[in-house]
Each structure stands twice: as C-alpha cells, then as structure tokens.
Image 1 (spheres, rainbow, N blue to C red):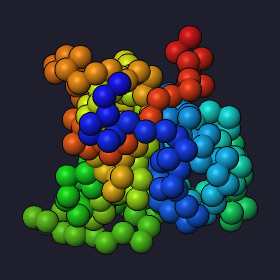
Image 2: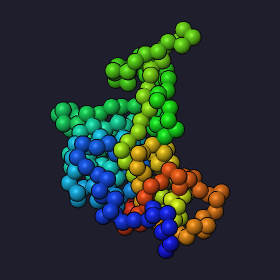
Image 3: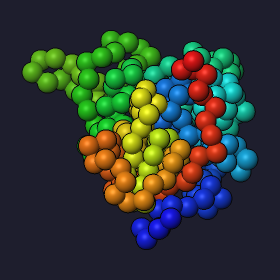
Length: 230
C-alpha cells in the first residue's frame, strides 16, 4: 500500500499523542461508531485525568465507557450519561465532573469548533440551572440566549468504514453518527478504519470526511459494538 501522504500508521505510533490530563473528542453514539482499537490503546497506556468530549459515555464495556468505568476521566462533556452507571456513580461521588449539553447544541458546538467559530447562541436551557450553569447570557433583539462556547480537542478519535491513503473517509450506516463533526474539531485527528484502499478507489460521491481533516489512519482490530445493530 502506497503511503506517500504519510497518514497510514500504527496504533503504537499514534499513542505518542496521548498523555495524562489531555482533552480527547470521540465519535460514537451509545458506543456504535466509536474507535475501539484506539480506546483500548489509551487504556493500555494507562493515561488518566482525561477530559472526554462526545455524545455520551457509552456502556461500561463498550466504546468510551471503558475509559469512564475504569476512572480514567476527570471530566466529561456529553448530552447524557444514563447508559453507563459508573458515570453517574462517579459524578455523585465527586470523582467525575460532568458538563451536560443538549444533544443538538453539543454537536453544533463541536461543528463550530471545527470551522473556527468561537461560540454560538442558543435559547435552549436558558432557564435551566444545569444547562445554563457558568455560561454567559447575551440579549439579542430583546431575547436572552446562552453563549455556548465552541468545542475542540487536542486529539479527535473517529471510526470509519473505509479510508484511502489521503485519509478520505466513508462511514457505515448509523455508525457515521457524530464522527464527521468530531473529525473536524481536533488539533490532531486519528481515524481508525475497517479497510484502507488505494487513492482513487473510493467513490467521491460517498466521501463524507475529506482527508484534509485527517492526520493519521490506523487499521482497526475489529469493533465491539455490532451487537447494538443486531
């Protein structure tokens, strides 16, 4: 396989980007579409005090939930944590800081981060203590809005069905979910993929994430969330 763009690499090599106390943004919805090989690599490296940004905290043994249940996270920014009882337990015990963001707003904050917009305005949750906590309020045309800051991360990790040598990505059905937005918002974006094909093999009409957003591509060792479709 030609690697003239230098993007095709190994799990071992990309692990150099991960360290204690960093911010990681992850793709996936209830674990489906999350990059299990990368998550397992993070676990094995033993890093802690992570800030994790993504739709949810997965399940205890699926997706990003593995990092949460093994107490590797110090903070989570997510739309819900209900599918992972460890997240709720650690939050109640003061071991895990959780910033809740309504799902659509969370994705828009990630999209804003990916395109370089510093913040968005939203009236969702403006009167809700949990959602509005510590957020500025801006009045526009007589109506109050929360100022929702854009979200970015040191590293974004995503899963895709296929990639070519330049890092162009296509996704598999609902496993696409939040991955295209997450891929845009990392200082470094690492894609775990089921298959790597030569440049020109992907149908341009099927490419969802252009390779310009992807820094590194690794081959997946297999996913652990197929059960959610069955």
